[in-house]
Image (spheres, rainbow, N blue to C red):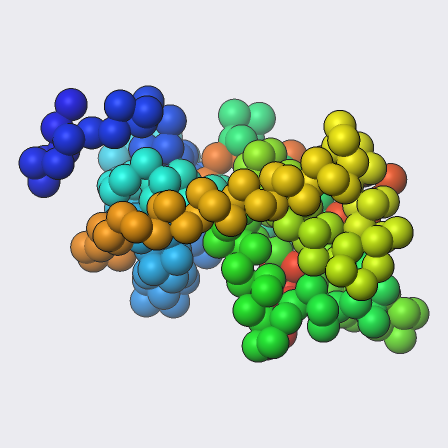
Length: 243
C-alpha cells in the first residue's frame, strides 16, 4: 500500500492504530484549549491526529492518526489515555468497546520525587514510551502517601507499570517487586520489558515526525483494572501536572 504522501506503507502496519472513536463528551477535553492537547499529542508522538466529526450525531467523533506505525501507535495510546482521564473526571459511563483501562496504587511520599524525576523528566519519558497518562495525586501527602493513576491501553498501562517498577527498583526493590508481582517472571521480567521499550523507542525516533494541523485524537475505552493488590499507576500523570 502507498500513503498519499507517496511513502510505502509499513508491511507490519495492519491499520489497528489508524483511528479511535471518541465519545462526544470527551472531545473538548481531548482538543484542549485552542487545540493545545492535540498539538501536545502530535508533538510527543510525531504523528498527525485529525478529528473526524462525520458521526457526531451518533454520539462520537473519530480520531484519525497519520504517520509511521510506531508514531501512530503512540498517538493512539495517548488519545485513549486522555479519553479515559476525561471519562473518570466526568463520571460518565464507559463504552465497553473502548480499549482503555486505569490502574492506581499508593506510593510513599518519599519516593514521589524519584519517580517524577528532575522537572518531571522521568515520568514524562515513561508516559511517552508507554503511551499513557500518569497522574500523581498528593492530596493525601499528610498521610504519608500519594495516589498514582495510570490511564491507557492494557498494553500501555502494563509497560508503564514495568517502567515505574524499574525506576523504583533502584531505591526500593521491595516496593518495585510488589508493583509487578502479577507479572510472570516478576521484577526481572518487568525490567526486561523496560529495556526492550527503550530500544524500540530509540528505533522509532529514527523516523521523522509527520505533522500537519492539530487534530483531535479519539479514545477508545475505559475499564477500571486497578485491583492488583499493590499500588496503581494511575496517578503519575498528576505528577506532570504538578510540575
